[in-house]
Length: 152
Image (tube, rainbow, N blue to C red; front, side):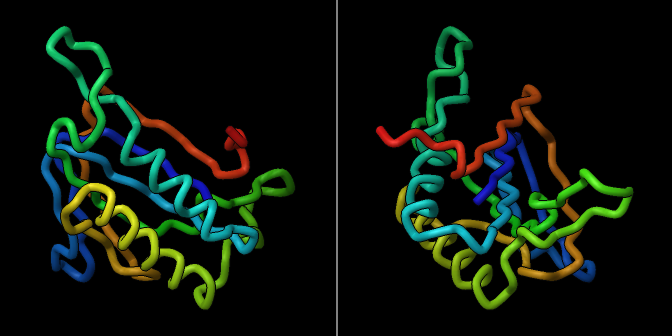
């Protein structure tokens, strides 16, 4: 599982001219799911996202987590995060999970994140042609991959 986490002052997702999800301050999370992902990967990543301390404290240092600042999450499914680009100029998405696996995991991530921050998660629509607007605050952008996690 791979996530691109962006600290935003606002973000929204539009599908066919309709806003499907919108937040103020918080995280825009682009989520890629691969076949090898497990429920343990999902829980680890959900914890990492919600506990990432990248919001400013009173001294302007990145010391506060999402809950500390009352932030929200806009979660967007994005299979292209697993693009393989080593050969040629057309990316391969063979590592990305098929919808029969990815959709249930995406829904589980929505639930896990919502439970961890204690409020609803804004979303896009899985598999739709989404238009994402955001104001990246900082900019702060962090890439996380469950294949890189440590076992302690």
